[in-house]
Image 1 (cartoon, rainbow, N blue to C red):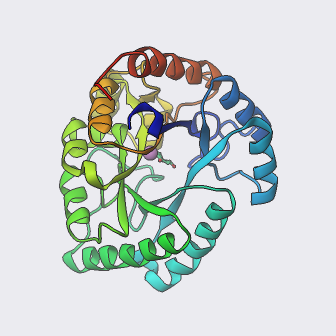
Image 2 (spheres, rainbow, N blue to C red):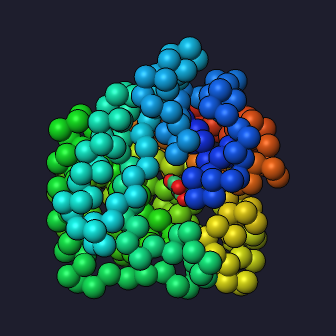
Length: 301
Ligand SMILES: O=C1C[C@@H](O)[C@H](O)[C@@H](O)C1=O
Ligand SMILES: [Co+2]
């Protein structure tokens, strides 16, 4: 067990962004997959612009790349679990066809992720009743994911009702560990709570998927002072790839290895591709991983 149980991916978000589809729209699927191959990653996540399963599978096969998973915006509280489950079934069927392991779920009811609101101070909150709807609904979605041979990994996210460590605690306590897992995103928890290791340590046994998102602390502080929205903050360069920001991914990696984490670590750094050349940043991440995480004997495994 150890390094060999981990697959390294890089998300399309450095090339194109589902939250602002105009960004990087000149970057085609071939361009993206070619860059991922050149940078030496094992695969990626499905972006909103990806084609149907058989077309995608051929493009992946040609480059020996794999799919880790795909984001799903759930609206369990807003639309009810029955409505959400129908869309989630289709999502899981697609993921199974492309050979993915993970269905990433983020509850988007009341989310300000795409709104022009101060993401540092205006996050939404659920009532106790809404929390119950969310957690019981997630157990149902997790059961569906399991039927497709997938794991549901819940994504805590800035500007949503499940953003802070306290909120992740509540979600984990009230969901079935066999059905609902955690996606640990270093960047989101750092921007939210200004620390990122406690969440990892506390919920290590529920983590089924990891996003390595680095943060430029100075930019984050400026964005917070200005009260910027989530989208404006990423356009200002709040996020970057590991090796280029202020987070230390060695500790995180050690902790994952120590607990026999098996699965994907996906580099996920949303930046404006017009300012941050996607392949250049993919290569910065790759070099950081090779030098600091893989070539160093971190622990004896
Ligand atoms: O996993 C993610 C998917 C994106 O759509 C999201 O906005 C980003 O911040 C993220 O962490
Ligand atoms: Co993420």
